[in-house]
Image 1: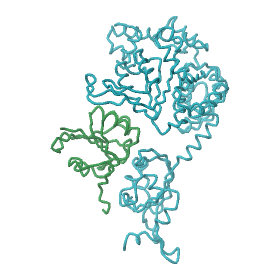
Image 2 (image 1 turned 60 degrees about the vertical axis):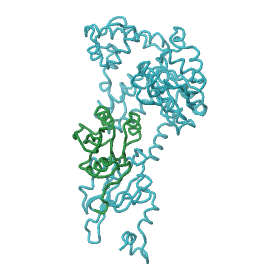
Image 3 (image 1 turned 45 degrees about the vertical axis):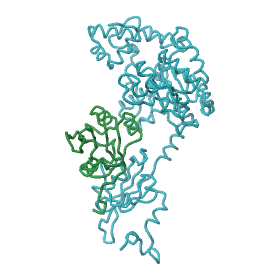
Length: 114
Length: 472
């Protein structure tokens, strides 16, 4: 089944803060793990409320982010949006892990020795 | 060289010592970064504050661990060289517990023995204890978020902590803007249920059918569109407090269900025969006169008595004497520091205007007036010209655009008098009804256009039309 995913970005990494992201990447993942329909949305200003609104209007099912305040985390959960928070890593690595079904909240996907 | 040798300090003592063992004992958060702003070391205080362990953090870009506003918006380290001065900035961070914590961040360069830039030292101070102390000091005459030293408020402050400890239902009454929500939250915060959730439901905000499912939840398949189980607010508030605001707007059918819950403490979701024993304290609030509503058949008498176990009536601001000055100064301090304005109080004339005003919108209105004045006033004292125009031009008091005639002046007159609660409500209701009708006439019966004229959503207009029995 197709799944809509949103990742707040900071340069080419997952944004460390949900509420401060001004750019988000949205993609749909097909049932076989392929990425389809990708797009980047630039927000007029950083706002957790506006981002939550975007998540609902875009019918996002999963949000992958860094730090998120409990208020927004609970709100999204309440709206049946799955939130994988505390994820650290480059966008491509994170998406690959997600599409392979192995991404979990709290994953640090960063080569710390580099 | 192994990892422990990498972080040793030599030369201070006869034998080398581990840097982490030294920094871990310092109660201030310490982060050591390399020149690429990657983490070399974090001490125990930062581990506790951020929720990340040293093992997680080592080698990561600092912004992924500290996650402060400063990191994301304008990291001062980008510009910092070996000879730069230290920088000290207030910011906030979000930790792994999903808490937003106010912090004071101090950044300085670390130089090697040759004076070259070797890295950066970052200290992170948790400002929560300071903020809490500030809040307590600034609310010496208060409880929770309420302040005041009038006799009526002092009585409330005395009884609130005692009643918070019980599990009795509470009914809070008072005009709009008097602080009913604040009292409800203060009761929850002072009660043994503080670890549980404080769930707020506005009974006037949702149509009856939605409200029932919102409050009591539903089972999958209970009705068309119920695609999955929904717990309902009563269940969400389990072991906590459920705050029902605008209880006077609760439809009669739901009043019966609420009454049943208050008696049995069992919640039955829509479509379910199995009940859930919810341990919930109910706090209800309304600006309406429930006794009159009972007389009119709009509110169940038994529910009113059931909710009326403990009742707090919040006095209107105009009856609170010196509190106006106290609250005025309180908001003035808040807004001048928030907007970073160098404002030195109010001029005598401006103060007189405010003290002579009747504040029909109560504390909320006073807060808005102060916020407006602080925004408008560039610096120095707030003058009458910095106050909203309706205060300085008596003719324009409460006159809404396009509404003239007896109803408006009647409402203005009654609002200037205190203690005529029901009369005010009735007149306001008819005024609102007239506004809706005017908008509908102007929009030639098109509801979406009428809603746009009124600045409301279509559902609000629909709800209010239903409430006033208007058929367009």
